[in-house]
Length: 116
Image 1: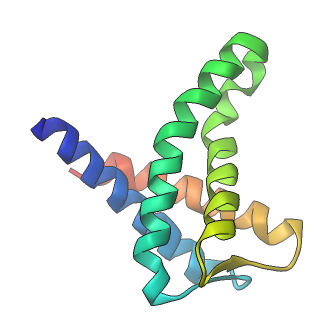
Image 2: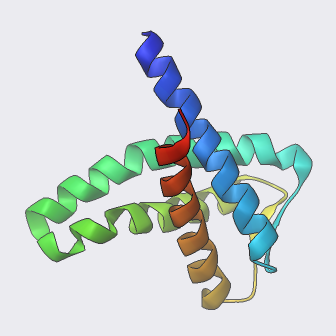
């Protein structure tokens, strides 16, 4: 039980760092301070569910996509989070969405590795 709580805390922490860095680096991404906690929780839950699911589907149907499963789940989690959280938005077309997705994906990956 303790291990699960520690993993959840690390996952929430890495999601928080990823979204915060992306909000600072991607000018078209905005997130209000009141919305930040809600966005982090929704994003982290979606990522924890989507990443294994997309990986499993990719392994069965398109093994070449397995390496991109984390990035794909990040895009989907960002889309859903933006749709359901007021105060969280990425505007300006496809370019900012791709940039924000890559930044969040990279930062959450590194943060998850570095957080104890």
